[in-house]
Image: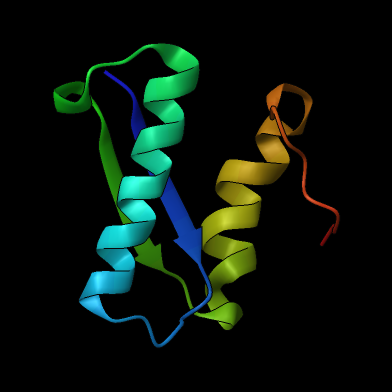
Length: 76
């Protein structure tokens, strides 16, 4: 039951672009994890740049740096 939670700075994405992004992520998950389409969920959440450190870096990235499969190329 993979759930992918994508947080990103606000972008002017249409609903179709969001759907296409979620579908592309779903395809990769199915390919690499052998998941069923019905098992994959994808969340897309815009986070304002002013809130990134508090809402994402401090709570989800920094505490988990050692276990991240892909580490960011920046620090805060």
